[in-house]
Image (cartoon, rainbow, N blue to C red; front, side):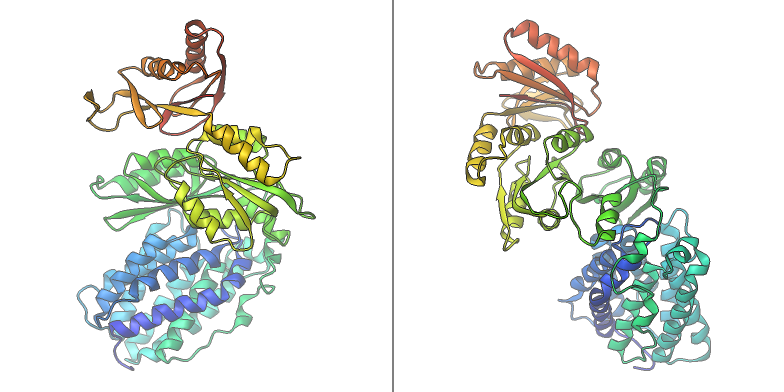
Length: 546
């Protein structure tokens, strides 16, 4: 193997590299203090590398270009966090350089490592030295220098490892935040773990040792030494956009917009999907901008300040739960919109997972939320019919935990369930009472039609405003107010509806909501009404009757 690398050897190296980082990901997590102290660099890079490796399991081809392309696609789809997206771009650049090649010699590999580094640098709006970018660049330069003098691939890998370790140890001198925490760069360390495993699989010499981590055994002590007061954007937001048919300038335009609402922005794609990562205080704005390009999937939104505090304190405990005692019942709700989120927190919901229509959380999102709750019982409110199955799947994958899934199909149903909860009743009686409250709530929405269609012989044009009640279109109009009144009329036909709640968002404002309440008071006297800000995307109004 001294002269060429083929597809099957590259497959073996990538899988071994992913496994090595998975083994040491907690040590890398404990190092992370840049660009913000979110403590999950190792986990994010590991998940990205494993996604690349998983794509390779069935491939039998020995063409290096085919293997590299599959790995790059898997890495992009599975990329998590800032570090994971950057790693996926390294895979992408490496693959691009090897297009058309059955195998690669020293010169080919050196060019591929250089292209990997260049692609990663281009993906970052404001690249900083002292990060995994620096480690990748120096290793690529070492490969290029060695390839000029020798054709021995294994020796070139050894030279790259040595160069990477040396520059990693210098990263605290490049970034003050690393020196303050007395650690090396987490992303660079993760990259070296991947490369170490890959080299061992190729039969190379390992020069990297665990002593190079500078970490306190995964204790997250480094995070505790960092002042987090300067963090301006606290929500780590990432998702995938289906890019089929998207305009060519979509990535650039979205990146420019994200820089106006946050930082640490990354927008990268391969023609089929666009992977997005941003730190922002307004994740809903980022999602709305992305929806103009295509449909969304794999949405993840995390509060980095909460994550940081939990890690430093030694346990991933929800801030709403006393760390010194077990809460009897914890609650998880799915919702989109900061107004709805505030309402849930006011009703003592412990965790709100961002999601809903067009952005469905995964079972993994629910499992993570359950595992971070210090509660004897956990109640999940999916609040969308398309999320119920994932919630139930998550409940089945949480052995030893008492997890109950209420089949709530809307946010108002979730709110009604929480209002009915009585702390002094046992869990069985509470689940019964909450389900009864849910069944009494009907929910409607006012939104714009996104395409021409026909529903029950009713012509609907793109841009029309429609009123939807329990999955049925009951009003079509050219103005928001007219459609909203039509929806209310359909909901008020049920004489049992005593309370009508109006939640505004998606371009509607409080004045419009108050005008709609006036219409209800005048047209249907005796009904109680309330107006609240939901802040939900997509829908002008979410209206409930109970």
